Amino acid sequence: MAAVYSSFILLHTFPSRSSFSRFHFHNLKLNNNNNPIFPMSSSLPLKSPFHLLPSHVNKFNRTNRTVFKFRASSSSSGSTTLTNRTVLFTSVITVTLAVANRVLYKLALIPMSNYPFFLAQFTTFGYVVIYFSILYIRYQLGIVTNEMLAIPKWRFFIIGFLEALGLVTGMFAGAILPGPVIPILNQTFLVWQLMFSALILRRRYSINQVVGCLLVGAGVVVAISSGSNAGQMLSEVEFFWPALMIVSCAFQAGASIIKEFVFLDSSTQLKKSLDIFVVNSFGSGFQALFVLLFLPLLSNLKGIPFVQLPSYLKSGAGCFLNIGAGKAGCDGAPLLPLLYVVTNLVFNISLLNVLKSSSAVVASLMLMLSVPISVYILSLPLPYLPEGGTTLSPFFLLGCAILVCGLYLYNTTRPARKNSEDD
Image (cartoon, rainbow, N blue to C red; front, side, top):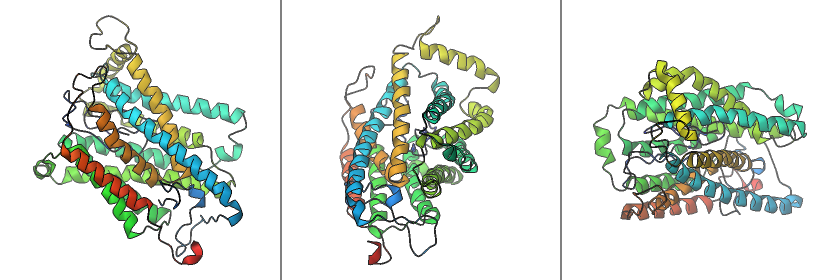
């Protein structure tokens, strides 16, 4: 599920409040009204352009004992090829939805510019209802089994806690840090994912794969910073605040890897693929619980006294629906906010499906790929965006080139293996 927070708040556009929404566009030249553009927040197979082999086919580090050992026999090569094509198609759809999600979020903030915190809470708690409703329907249809619902809930408890904790720490740090340095610090999210993937999932990465991931992160930084002197601004801030932002990335990355662990472990315990709405529903539910507990703190961080929160939410609902008197500035509602909410919901489901069928690192790389595409589209003249038509700097093209080189290096490198028998 997704929640949208203004200025420096993390947008969790991953199911159960995605951990992959860690890429922020702050102080972009194409953004003249100080509204940030929030994007959303492994080892890949070898024969797919994105190395998107299902995780249950991946072989983990054989030098460490792990409960996950999967092998694909030669007789299953045809089905594996078909699966690769299916996952690749899903990935392309997910990147398209990621771009649409970011663009529509920017458009949704036009009528909701005074109520981004309401939009965040609406998606946070509203998605819990939607996810559990879908889960109930799928249970009645026999798609979700009793065995799936019986998996340990403490894992979802940890996921929800980590994502909520990442949200709060990110908000605290974002309130102090200069806007342009936040997307740079957020690139540590991928580094944390690689580390947790190696520690928790026992995956091994070659040097080229690690370098490729770092190049992707560097390309995003160059593309969205557009040459801003973020280093100098960062030197003016106490070390504690950038460190806190990096720690918030660690919380989010840990949650994403645990989600992948849940899918992998369930495939061995249940002998079948775990339905994504089990993870969506319970993960989102626990995160909403922790967000509710942190709500007084979150509202104060956004400059909304907790005693005034009910009236603020009521006014936000009126603007969202564009009803009631005195709703000046809500032009474009409810169409634009609803378009964003629907797209964001579908995007969350699609992204979790990619994580399930490939890996958390792959999902992050795809989201990074969608960042410069979103920046380019938002630089064009769009309805309700008078600041459209911005000329992109050479740094944007340079960043895109670095990003593509990183993706190519990662996807053309064979994963690290202990010996040839793993091949």
